[in-house]
Length: 635
Image 1 (cartoon, rainbow, N blue to C red):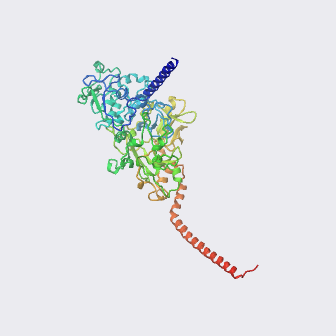
Image 2: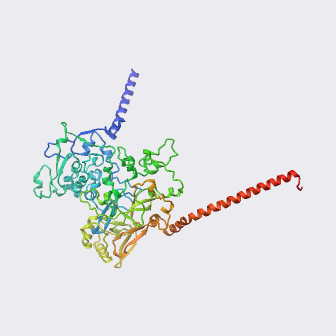
Image 3: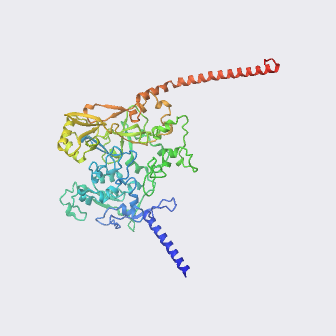
């Protein structure tokens, strides 16, 4: 009996253990998060659910937009876990990036402002909080390239002053479709347009292929109610249409289910919306003149290298302490031999293993792979580059001029925080601020600058392209003195532009070097060129020649102060190199063919001399032996 009771207790404990573990597992993973091992692509035939979790009926006159949280999450995917992924977790204050990455760039030529913004606290950038940008303000400017969730969904991050606006616009949930929808009719530009109109809760549904949407929530009154038409009686509905979503009934089956054409392996086109870049010159519209990345030409997708698990923590092409397997998907991880592991981990996806014969090891210590293999071939002058998030590429009505603001220079070979030289993009930050007690310059709130400094400057607001505007010293002095009289901060008013910090001393505009003396740069890795187009393919002179763009390229300094004139800075400065030294060093490469000839001739002469002495020695030894045989020697 005792043994039986013990057996029951053991059995009960085992069941409890299994149940507890299955419960914990179920909290982290749901049915769609774990593969059963089949490579077959699952069919997504789903009921649409609104923000309240109710199944949507397409016949409903006041049908709500479907919620990605409840349609994709709910029973199938762990929405909370996914929403903490790299593209969404902006509010996490612990995520301080060790390497500079592409910032959001606030640009306003009417206030002479170019400000790098990052929630990840990159050195030299500012957070929206430091600029007093509310979430709604941030989304209006940058939301078209934001995948939703996190800052646009958490109540704790909302500005109390925007409470009523959030009630009208709804939450901008993590938009799974912006990456995973493979339907050619999914319209990312439509998504972007609806973010600008504060149609947050409608944006994902409005971009899909089975809905029709009209309306502008930003034009609705704070008391707007979809079910109460009297709340819109005061607006002109000819120009301000209330948000209204209609579902295409033919897309629903008898169980009110809709087919989603989803792909786990995200199509490249979906990545391009946020991650496109193009050299800005007269050939910008000639797509046949713009080369594609060699990896894509080989048939790879972006996500073959930039992978992620259910946590959506993307591999970024660099070693990442957070992701254990990240090294296997770096340039070195795929293209170099790994002698430390018994299991081959290199050559992923058929990657070739180059020998790099004849290249001195110092190159691999000082240069990143992308220095030789990425971007356009170096030229004497820097090129402007247009990128999706800074120039709103792919949106309706985007300015297509090649010199649209902000001006981003590309192909600047710069020493990274890890001590390796790599190609980077570069901007010259420009903003109004104040100097604190430690001498650091902090920006003034954007709204304050727009309301108070813009009227004083009186700059043309019609154009957002061309040469960056410059103003006289006297106008800068006037603005700084006005700021000083307002006493809005305890610090001294300053203006940062062109890598310098300007302030007024005895009615004179003075300047000194600032943290931005070399601008704000971030690494670039694409497009990757094939090996036969890499730097060095023509020999050492590709870099080590007098006036080589690698060391002697002129990088333009963009300043808003007229008296500073048009200046440039040598590319060597960004590498912590001395251009004069590099020029003298390059001279040695000019004489190296002669030196090689001299070495070869000297080696031949030395060989002849050695051979001569060798045979002379042989003769001496033979003569000595002969003497010994004849006994002709002295004691």
